[in-house]
Amino acid sequence: MNNIYVHYHQDEHHFVDRCMEWAQQAEENHKVKHTDFLDPREQQILQSIVSKYQDIHMMDWGGHDDAERKKAIIAPHYVHMDESSFSELIQVVQIHSEDSKYDQLHHGDFLGSFLGLGLKRNKLGDIQLLPHACQVVVDKDIAHYISSQLLKVGSVKVATEVLPIDQLQPMQVRFSSKAFTVSSLRLDNVVSSAINQSRAKAMQLIKQNKCKVNWKWTTQPSLSLESGDVISCKGFGRFKIQSLEGPTKKGKFRLMIGFYD
Image (tube, rainbow, N blue to C red; front, side, top):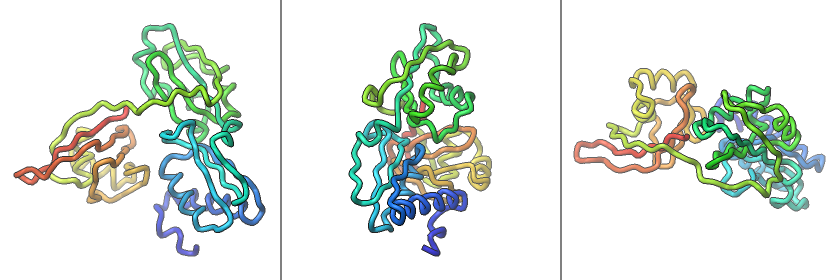
């Protein structure tokens, strides 16, 4: 694996090292390793590295099959794993309020409040906004800390309770969708339209290593995008190319972009 780093962005090298360490411990020392919550790109990296070892396997899960952020277990091949293996690792914190302003809160409001408690993002799984409540999948070790310390989200007073993972209510990600027409599917061109900034500004963000495509850092403004790609830009949020039509007679492309709520 001497040349393994050539497959990954420089910012991912530290995580690659950790993955190899976990894999080696599982194979050589017969240890079972539980990770923090991983984003889809980290899940992909870990799966790729674990697959290079013959005598170990892994499973990741985030509370339901379509979860975005998941914990992983890496173990010797003889260790059986299924969803029940995660019941002692994760719980759900449910948040609700009688305040009428509660329904105006967004994903970022909840995430900001969790981080304001001194929590790291890798201790938190998916944050799910339900009609009259919010459920967040968390590391079991911090569930009761959140429940006792989280008194407000933004300016809204809230109440919390800790639930077992089987009371998580899976839900689809909510998008605010908008149609765009772009001259090309280059990353800088699509980002420019999506965040309503000049192409020069979009190119600057990308070259400054502030954009991810499918959770992977990129500094390539010319990267060609496809339907289903997820793009995030620091300071401008995250969006997904939901559908793609074109090219038109004038050589342009029609996109439907979904902005994460």
